[in-house]
Image (tube, chains in turn green, cyan):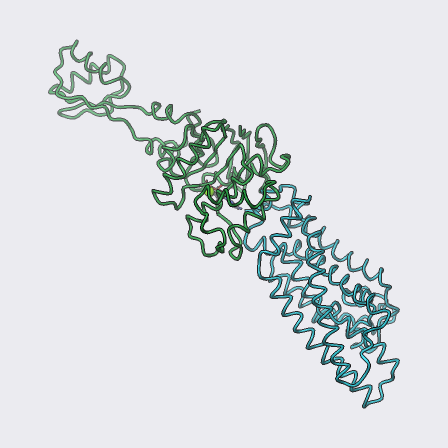
Length: 297
Length: 268
Ligand SMILES: Nc1ncnc2c1ncn2[C@@H]1O[C@H](COP(=O)(O)OP(=O)(O)O)[C@@H](O)[C@H]1O
Ligand SMILES: [Mg+2]
């Protein structure tokens, strides 16, 4: 369980993170979302004590990061940007962290295998592609077999195959009861990976909940085609539905289910030519949440 | 603490930088100590340099490493910190050990075997170069004296302390280029000038022995090379352990300042 409480960080007059609180639960993948510059990396850096918060704190199963004895055995962290010493081989990079994780060379090879880098163990990291660096970063985070995993933009720069691979990898880890927190500036890239979402904009929380709730929270609208749009619009108003558009041949109504609209029109004797439910796609919900000033909670 | 030390040790030896530097240093010292020894031998055989004077000069040649080439262990020690900031590997390091003082202390502890390794290479280089120089110049190199092993050990001690000063400087400056420029400017320009200047004034000359190279010279027992070049000599040089303490104090001051001013800062 990761609990973020009232984290705040100011850079001059800019509030990079503004009184942010949320939780990531065990057994789930939590997507930490927001456009570039929203404050995701700053939040994760404060949580792991790389930068000092102006206020607030983060705990991992109840313990702040700097109070964890051997954090690598509890919390695996892979932050943006990915950093390695270019002259060091992949295996030597892991061996440098291994003492902190309390593991030996076998485990280093094991995690390299886990991320599909077995063949690159003795290669200098300077020669790695972006995707390989991402995998090595993940391997390093996995070294101590941590119960909690924090990944900053893990799908950034990955090809579709890599995205699919990491999705299955993370789903599998979550199903083992681990707490997984991943950030992304694109909801669509992690939509099929996450269970819960935390959305921030300008350093502030704008939504926290399950992905399913987010989808159903979207106002679904119904486009009704009818020869008598004026009568239908009047009917909708009587039913206290919102009419968002009236044309010569159709009315767009927000609020009710399509079946309710059909039944009401039938009862009122208004002929209908067609009924189409138009659900807003997740990415536009995400955009409207992060672009608007208003929060949902 | 143990994991941090092992990690630092592995980080150091998994890059190529340290042995390239050590090798360059060894080659340089063989050449310089050879040249100097040969010159002193020539003075003794042709220009009437007295035997007692020659014997006083010989430890200077063998102890040349720490008093003249301390830049190498400083750079290698500083590298343990600066390399992490340059490649930003300080981030994974602090993620693995958020108690930053533990990491820095581990760098200091791991700096000891590094200083010993570099010290053995540097000291051997001076013994080989100097020994060959005196022999080919036609004088007794006086290598197999009773004090030789003591001098050898003290020379390595000086290297170790210089490596630790390097760790402290690295913490304070965090930029490798910055450390190199600072050390070069100080050792090649400021310190020799300061040495000469301080020795011009009767009251201030007591301070000259506290300059790093002079303190280093008193550890190795050889007369300090810069003091000799200023022709006045240091004003009652420090004892071996006093010299070591003065050097260590430099390292501690740099390290503590560095920790407070740089290491505790946000990393991103
Ligand atoms: N060290 C810093 N100094 C000044 N501003 C910063 C610093 N780090 C981040 N910021 C600013 O804080 C905001 C949040 O940045 P960041 O946390 O990196 O966002 P995200 O990871 O969501 O893209 C941005 O506007 C960024 O420019
Ligand atoms: Mg970011």
